[in-house]
Image 1 (cartoon, rainbow, N blue to C red):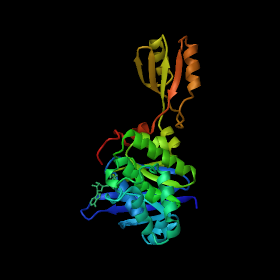
Image 2 (image 1 turned 45 degrees about the horizontal axis):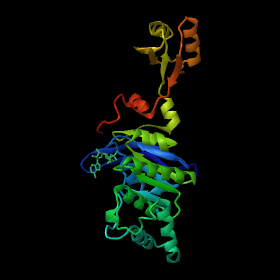
Image 3 (image 1 turned 60 degrees about the horizontal axis):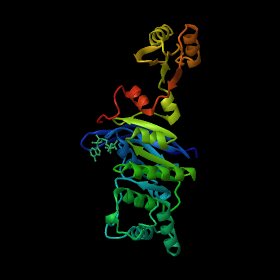
Image 4 (image 1 turned 30 degrees about the vertical axis):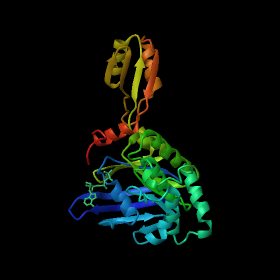
Amino acid sequence: MTVVIETRGLTKRYRGGQLAVDRLDLAVPTGSVFGFLGPNGSGKTTTIRMLMGLIEPTAGTASVLGRGMPRAARAVLPQVGALIEGPALYGYLNGRDNLLRYDSADPTADPRTRRARVSGALERVGLTAAGGKKAKAYSLGMKQRLALAAALLQPRKLLVLDEPTNGLDPQGMREIRALVRELAGEGTTVFLSSHLLDEIEQVCTHAAVMARGRLLTQGTVAELAAGTRGRLAVTTPDPADAARVLKELGVTDVTVAGDRVSGELPVSDEGEPAEPADLNSALVRAGVRVRAFGVERASLEDAFVALTGEGFDVAG
Ligand SMILES: Nc1ncnc2c1ncn2[C@@H]1O[C@H](COP(=O)(O)OP(=O)(O)OP(=O)(O)O)[C@@H](O)[C@H]1O
């Protein structure tokens, strides 16, 4: 199997008439850390709920681990660890007892190895020391980690995490990201939704971008960012000359700030960006003294803005 999640024309219209997901074609490669990115209200949670068989699509199909959902939910879900809509924990029980409870609710879990499994899961998420503390006394980050531990009691082929770092402080976010990387390193495919672009850039190999229920694009994170032109930046004691030469060479949106000249790389008729080295040598030939020359890598945020023509923090 080369994809773990595949949807075709997946659509959800809620009873009130709201079209939350609109003909979504998603393909999540096996072994990827797949970022499902979009502003609030773009349809991410609705998609995840359809993938997990929690709600029925209005139209289209979804398959998870090669089986159609929601039909095959009973066969598929035991192989999927999911963290959706905040952790359901018993506040009056400590962390360890919460996990023991989860584990005993799983009919396939062998009671003889329960304690070892729970200790292993606590260890995994860094909660061994806090395992005896009541869950209601946990910070949000600890609660989130405990919920992740519950999802990790059994070996999983796929982890589905809906906004796993939502509400966490920077330290909590770093811990969850490190855990995601570690799990991915062991071969678990991770599908995680986020409205944070730099989070996706930091942990994901692949991403899909949603806006208003529609898929804008999907691919590797490198491809998505590369689809956007980088910005050329030249530092020179001759900024006016540099700006003139760059404009003659087809560089657009040229701006000068002190000794720094920047602009958009020209693109050939075939859509290929110009070779920066050629621009550099043209500057030098024209007598412009170049102190520094570089192309700033486009970020996923640039890609998003280029795709939608608007900033990322828009309401869906
Ligand atoms: N149960 C529901 N009934 C009616 N409309 C809903 C329901 N759940 C979500 N919606 C609407 O569907 C759209 C998509 O919501 P969804 O929660 O899937 O987006 P999201 O990308 O996950 O956003 P967020 O990050 O805020 O959760 C929104 O306009 C939302 O108001």
